[in-house]
Image 1 (cartoon, helix red, strand yellow):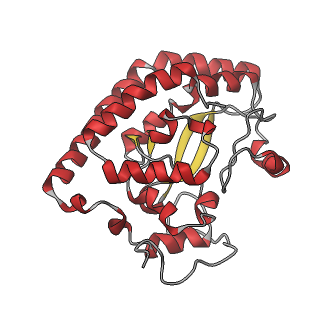
Image 2 (cartoon, rainbow, N blue to C red):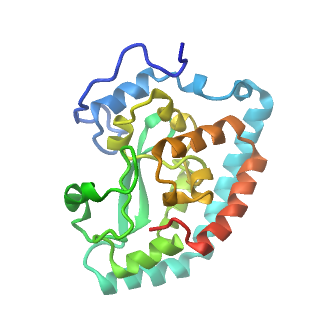
Length: 256
């Protein structure tokens, strides 16, 4: 018996419903609300998640997230200003992109990135689906025509990700953890164990990013890396991923 499989299949196709409470910042597919209730989230963690050592390390991890994200926001604030000016000077639209994704146990939250695409990017996505270079429900396109010239540089250098430090400070994200999915992608996951990536707080960087990022075109491989991270997690693993993120960002490997 697969311990990660739900007793009854999810509704298909998922339908968007009105948010059920004022704490939910945006509407999500009905399947997402169902998974929030029915996925056995704690059982998706390794058995040592019930130990005192795990809980202590989790608190240390949160403390480091607060200190490092706050320090990063303060130190990088001049760079934020330069990037904001470049975005406003070269394209029409806001400086920040409101990133509507799912966090711990599929709870919706709004994160922020520097805007790298044209303002009509979401509306144009449908016409580009045939050019998707990833398997599964995730959309990745190497030469995406919606990306602005400044946005291409920001993506290649990963500078567009810096505003996510605010989400880390708030607790919606961590510095290290599986990447948060869009609700529509999460609702379309074909395997129940894929959803286990949200048994922990999602992060800015992860194994997928340091091992190849978008060059890893197989969606299941990406999900297995997220699962591996959760099963093997400790503070030392986070430290190693953070160290490997630096050269990965400098090389720009798989960033587009």
